[in-house]
Amino acid sequence: MKKIFLLLVLAGTMTTMMGQHARLNFYAAYTFDDGFDVVNDANTFYNGTVKGGVQWGAGLEYLFNKQSSAELLWLHRSTTVPANFKFGSNTQLRSETFDLKHDFIMLSGDGHFGSGGKAEGYAGVMGGVLISHLEAPSLGKSSSNTNFAWGGRVGTNIWFSPKLGLKLQALILSASRATGGDYYWSWYGPIYLTEYSTLWQFSLGGGLTFKLGK
Image 1 (cartoon, rainbow, N blue to C red):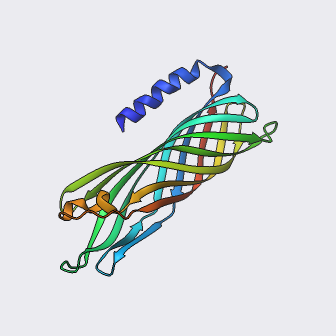
Image 2: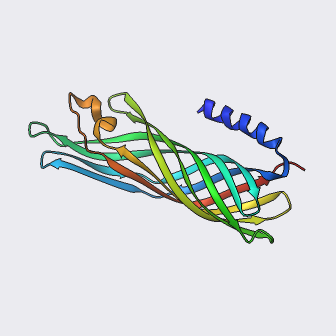
Image 3: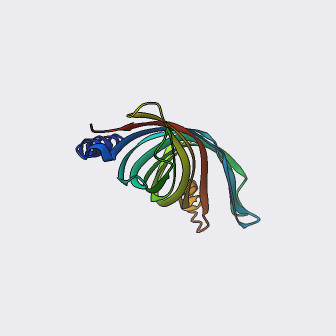
């Protein structure tokens, strides 16, 4: 996480040199629960819920013109994953509450509209990676994984002054092959499952936006 923060600071320094076309954005939002249920057969399955919680982060945005921009974002969330699973007819149903950390590193391309007044709407699509770190507290074991991620958003900037504004935003993020299989529970024995489910993460929130330069 320190490397990600230092990368943003370095990018921020470079972006500041770009003048009025750059913005520094800070985000905070509530992310809703996402359930997953993957079944191989009656004796091999896993299901659970990636619990909701606060997601926060920052982004560096460059405006090509009044109608379009690109932003590099980092979004972090720490949560828990209560899950049930069974691997084979000779095993018992087990339960575990995992500790999960998500770090999304995304590049977003946005279109802006109504930029002549106090309220500036925007919408865009994004692509990048999800870096996940999962821990099983009862076993003291952990696993990390990186998956391709994508998403979309729609929001509004409400400007209090020529430099400072409030962001209101709805965001959906997804990552393929991000829950289940060998990633979550490989340490429970010589079990390898090829089934995975896709993570969906919907959040509502906002943040602050600062125009850089003179």
